Image (cartoon, rainbow, N blue to C red):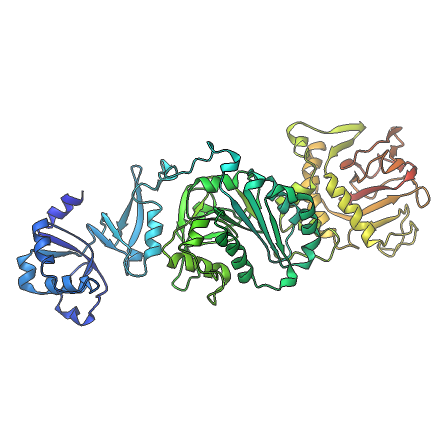
Length: 616
């Protein structure tokens, strides 16, 4: 194709053309006029017969670092020499596409399992693409597809190239990795984040850990982690808030630890908002054998991710045509990108060679991550992001309130999936897939809903609040100020948890209701949402009553025979009792008319239940 297009020019030498004149703008008027296309010579690409090219370059009488484009330009602008050498320019980008000044004219065209650049202004398919001037990043973008890097039919064409095989290595021969963890603001689910570090499928003796924590709030869980998991890493170094480091200084410190250690083969940087749920992540990234590579992670259901597909001339975010498709996994592969953050792997040799400066994050007025990526780009190094595997996702750290005892309980809106993993019973989905529901009494259903941790944290949160009602009929919390069948309780509204509790009812209780009571579609509304405490010396039982609800849920929060004796619920009309409720399981029963019931006496210890009167 290249030779065919060249011969169609009927000239001996064809140079690329561009819309800007460089380096001597005063020569612009000397160029032959052009009706259509680019007017000015660009020496980044040319093709010609070897004898002719040789004759031209023999005229070079200048220094090696003098401007070659000016040299060729002056020959071309000389009508006699232009005719002598049969020189012309590729005005319409038939062979050569210069990107500078023409980015709006260039698109990626997919056809017949191949990717090509198309010039939509000239309707041509250039063969050679030149990232001249400030268009290197756009050239990198095109290189993600052209010539055979990725297409819609066969996907990634380069992802299996130059891989590093770790399977044949013994554990002690695997690369040494320093994991740099950065906790820069209050972060939900931090204990789970730390435990995932231990769960990474990588030998303890081959991984070291550096933790920078800027938050006093997180010091206790980090100390506990350090005490419990020292043997799970070759070494652990923790730097706390007392050091008063900036983010950039902390990141420089972590990277420097690897740079100074000749045995550090890789540096793996990980922020506390990254849920790295794939234990194979480290191995996968190492096997890709790139200088700098990031696993793609994004927020659930959002386009927010840990990479940018493009940046503007100031280094800030710019829209990339393929960004959404990559985040949504419509295009899967290995992508050369200009910006990564939050989680990435770097080769130690690169830190000791191309990136030797200590202040990778702090030598610019930009944000530390932008400064870091700018330094990498200026060294001519490529940053890759891979979405070939599912690595995990990003948390949202916004509006994380740390004023409670167990603050993660309030994350049902902000980080629903992580909240569910921590607090919803592991067998909840089996209610729908395997009909994991029991019916101990007529129209009384029993099913798993809360994890043990959810039960424990709810109880601890209420006891920490401590303002239990006295079980009196007079109750200022209620409209009218009177409770006919009082309990010793705390309402969710009192602890600022009612909004979150109603979300729980709508998300997790409503689907069960519609399964168990066909034809009834709940609004999952409730005014009375409260935790009840039963004690032999306080309020051991509850007299027979109806609930002011269409249906009621009653969730057992601790274990009979361990935390208390006695207790349970008796439905009088059916003479049916449930005397051994399971921790984390919920009873669901109609409230009005049919299910007159009582709370059986607790004879020892303390029994806790969580109750909602739904659709009053």
